[in-house]
Image 1 (cartoon, one colour):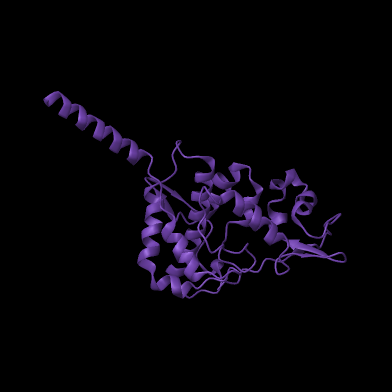
Image 2 (tube, rainbow, N blue to C red):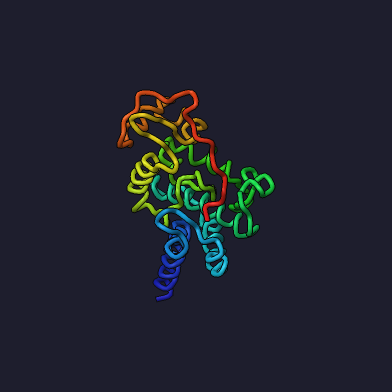
Length: 235
């Protein structure tokens, strides 16, 4: 009997250890925050988020405490890091509210604002050294830096289950959004995102990438064909 008890305890400890090693952050709280405080057009009610800030901070801590492991799928990792980027940007705004522009903050792109164990990450770290390494150009249309010209903040959290649908949907919506790109038979002016990250889009063939999603096809991008980025807060 004693031997069986020891065996049972060992099994329980092993199961607990496996469960702990495979723990994922629950994006449900972030999902509810976004549903309640972000419009279909991507306008963010920062004051509304501030009113439920304990819930927001709880979610933010859960991201920090439950980072991706090798056991995670690519989709799980992608959803995690995009949610992390977007929630960091929101946290930077509500921690310094009111602000009119994220660039009012001190070096917002390089602040090591997010901690996982002994390592800290900035927005630039997450975008350039993690997300862009996925070799998935559509990530540029899901990450939001709290600005008017950014791709709109989706009012749902990203998960392994919805990330591929969101990549396709948000890319098409962004390219055909006349407030962010002007693509007509007589005029072509596109977001500076396509200028800044040109090499991410079909190895620099931005025209073919745009044509895959645009309702109106283009043959070239004029030299003056980039719209100056509007950093005004997306509230």
